[in-house]
Image (tube, rainbow, N blue to C red; front, side, top):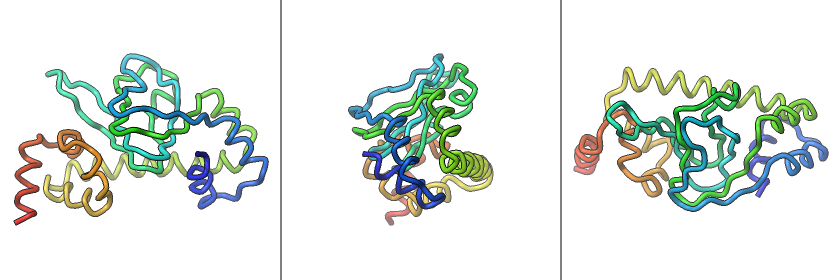
Length: 191
């Protein structure tokens, strides 16, 4: 199960055999069923997850009690409430498996040990952090500047598999609209 993670890392840095052994030591494989909340709000995130297969989302409840999806992860990739995981503070977000998921997870203390013991993983961690910052900045700009239809079209182009695996209400929330608006946009595109 570590293969996809090692493959992703190898695209960015050179791994030694000892680096590969460390990943097996520190990243724990776990399987979760569909609709399982694996990290709850008002708690400190215990793990950084690497998604081997399946779809995972971060969400919180707004002041009206509605769920707001802030991130949907398509494999392969990392997901957690990053700020809270890194700082070991309580998060206002829930992490939920949308589908059945194969994940690798690592605690903050083990992540710190791994980055101390493996310069390759330290370098890779910097790359992941930079990509995360870029993603969040781009997402903020797109929510502010693109129309709802443009955001949906971009999602279709970049992540077409989301439509077959993620409920429309989560997609709509992630795109900053309600489910009715998304349905209307989808109907217009089909015409």
